[in-house]
Length: 201
Image (cartoon, rainbow, N blue to C red; front, side, top):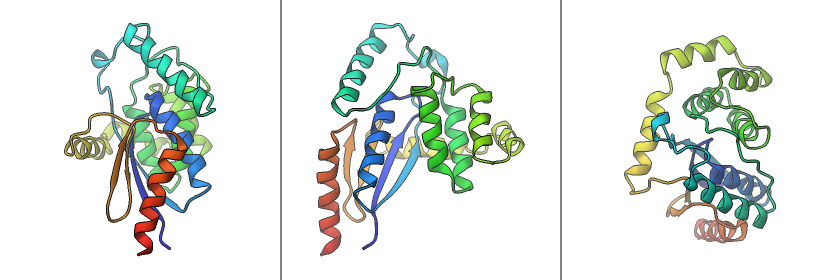
């Protein structure tokens, strides 16, 4: 049977996306999935970002901690909010060399486990070096904004169906089921089972 397609729109500065990634990693061990991560830049410019000590961030983090505990996932509050565009571009660069998943997980872990600034080029270049990719090529891609349109198009595509939040899941090969936000593993698995059943007919 062909794998079940799961498209997920996500941003590296979003803690809910980090939690979703950890849950999806567990589900992939149980199901034959074709998971496609799509870039979404929540805060393209710093002026759009709330301060890290703002009431909004504090309330959001309480919700993140609750969800992390419910799903037994380790996560640490970053000491600063990083703009994520370069991280998104770095992952797209890795996608071209078939090491997207490795890069994707390293970026998330750098920010939400290791306390690193994923806006900092040095952090991203260290990740790319670990993956044995060409650092100078990536620097040139950044300079030329090679992946900027791909990111913009991905955002536009999500907005076209009326969704402006991430993580956003599109599950299924023929009939797609849309889920937004962090959901318990069992709930996601039920939706995947429905998609699987449809493929068996």
